[in-house]
Image (cartoon, rainbow, N blue to C red; front, side, top):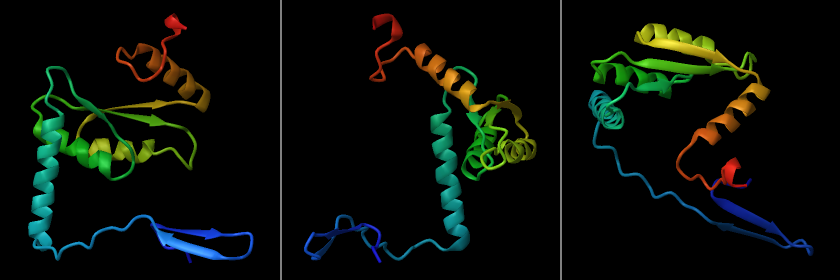
Length: 146
């Protein structure tokens, strides 16, 4: 079995070479336990969200049906005196659409929530239009300069 961070090479003669290209350093024994660790993690996440939401305009966020974006959205709401809006892009496909779960999160968190359902061709058109609206360089030559 090939372990994570390793490589294997087979030669034409059947010789096998293996090596390691990456190794994680061993973690130190945690010095925070249970509730204390959760309190520290909560404080760090809260402070990070506060830093990233300093703005002179309205702030909103993308909300998925997973666990990370609802956590960030809830922290945004707690950190702000203004209303927080959340946005979700739904696909309408059962395997990939998280909009139903995102709606539940938005209701629980208490944020204004907008869901936009798009098909793959609409998403491509919106991506192209969005890139055309970007003012800073992304390594893409604007259509007007081609």
